[in-house]
Amino acid sequence: GAGVSQSPSNKVTEKGKDVELRCDPISGHTALYWYRQSLGQGLEFLIYFQGNSAPDKSGLPSDRFSAERTGGSVSTLTIQRTQQEDSAVYLCASSLEASGRGETQYFGPGTRLLVL
Amino acid sequence: DQQVKQNSPSLSVQEGRISILNCDYTNSMFDYFLWYKKYPAEGPTFLISISSIKDKNEDGRFTVFLNKSAKHLSLHIVPSQPGDSAVYFCAARAGGYQKVTFGTGTKLQVIP
Image (cartoon, rainbow over all chains, first blue to last red; front, side, top):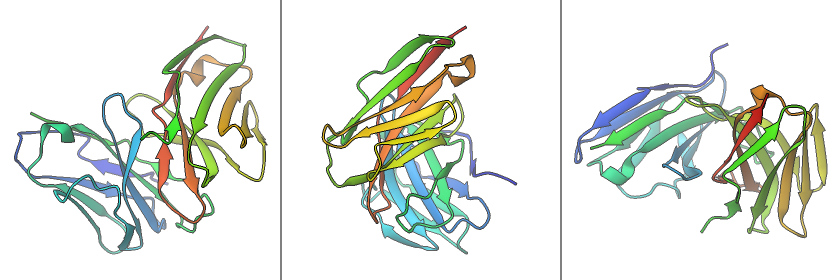
């Protein structure tokens, strides 16, 4: 059984460019989460999806960040007009459902983004 | 505002001894706590969790203790093994709310 996969594994981009990060959750998992980890920081919650809808977008740092999920499966996180402070490891996780009972989240390996 | 704090960025322990990783939180609404382990270049993997209705949960060599009055939890690893060397993240969530708040992690090194 495949785990959560993310692509690309590494991305170097120039300031001002747009980037798109992809997450493939574990098959059958209805909940999907995006986090980021900046250097020396903990994991910062960005957004989560239950199915294709995003009940909680409170963690998105600015309106340059957006995410979508289609078909209840793959999700993309888009960062427009990237800034150097966007450099971080972006982690995706999925869980069976998001009912608040503490379901285990399974993480992907992350995408390491460097904005020059 | 760091609601989940891991004040020790690193810890070294001799193989076979006990490793104790600490975590403090400030949000009294948190009622479920998790520990994750992370190896370099990999995503975090779930290790053990505890609900606020309990004060201890044990799984093999791993035990998590929760002191709600002190807003403190700890992860005990006994006996520690070299393969336990990793970064350990403490995490917490409030009931019915899916946002999980993570600490900054503690890097554990188990010395053979």
